[in-house]
Length: 364
Image (cartoon, rainbow, N blue to C red):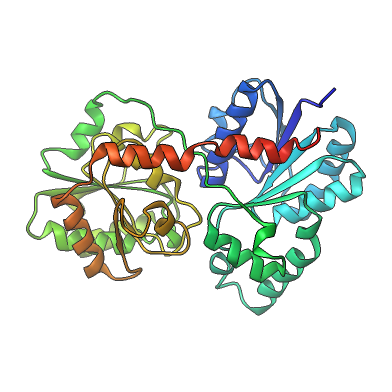
């Protein structure tokens, strides 16, 4: 009889893309009749309240990645799940080593959600050596290796020495946001602004909301516009200061992280992604699910694939506030047909969860 227990290993349940994908997969696997265990280095994070109550959550209490290996090996030896998905290097390596130590036959599926050479570009020579060495030594021992975009497969192939075909490209499954009704609190934030521009993401260097502020300032000079940046992070004070310097602080709202961003998506006129790099930006697809016109920097690796080289939304060069402002104006003045965007979002998300399940239960 096939084993019906599956496991996930993550650092925590922060509000990032990998954690949100894990939640989607967990809900899908539960609906298919599987038991699900969730192993976390730290049982914390904004998304933890959204974990279904049927899931067995284990707090490993691990302060460092290497502290994960032995407790996970013990779990695999005792619980014997059919498969375990491990997300985000270097935790992926720890999951592979744990399986080796446990001598279990649990399938290990590793997944990476970004081009790692870009993500760790500023870490220096020895960190890059460790990245390449660990991938070359351990990634061949995984049963499956999932990446979220074709360009990411190329990047990880170069790092690991494995052929691109050794990586399975599965676009992240993205659930359509809830059918939100008008939210008075959100409407108050927008005020009477005719042009409503939205950004959703952590306030960190990767997301480059400073570029967005500079581009928005160009628009706000002669348009009745307001910008909401939905998210939290270390750069909040820096971004607030930059908005003051640009003279747009009265038009920029930063309400923090929200578990349900749907009222913001459904009340905006334009969604803008200003990142320097992305794996596969879930927020773009969430916006498209809502029929919201989108604009993005043409950053590696995901936006160009999501938007099909600009067919479904504007693309602007990274780091160019003038070009991004021009692309935003075009998106506001000539919005994309909402039905076209919804169809594209549904197509990108179709069958992704089932493909993950197929990788995890091969011959089980």
